[in-house]
Length: 99
Image (tube, rainbow, N blue to C red; front, top):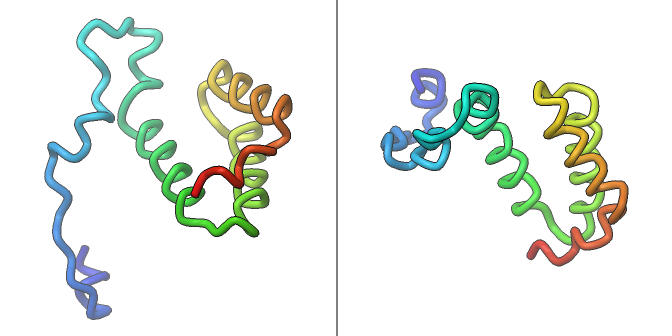
C-alpha cells in the first residue's frame, strides 16, 4: 500500500467482507478446508480476473498459460488434475464466451 501511494496511486483497503467467499465453510473437513480459502481462493480470483479482463483475441492464450501454471505448480493435486482434465477435454474452446 505504501509503494502504491508513493507512486501516486490512491488506494482504498478492501473491506474484510469482500473476502467472505474465501473463508472455508464451517462444515468443511480438515482435508478440504485449506483448498477453500486464503491463498488458494485468492489465486483463483486472480486467474478469473485476469481471464475476464482479457479480450477475445488474447483470452485463449491467457487460459493456456493459466492451465500450464496450474498443471505444474498448483498445490492441490486433485484440483489441478480436475482443472487440467477439463481444459484438455475442451481445449479452451469456450474461452471466447467469457465476455
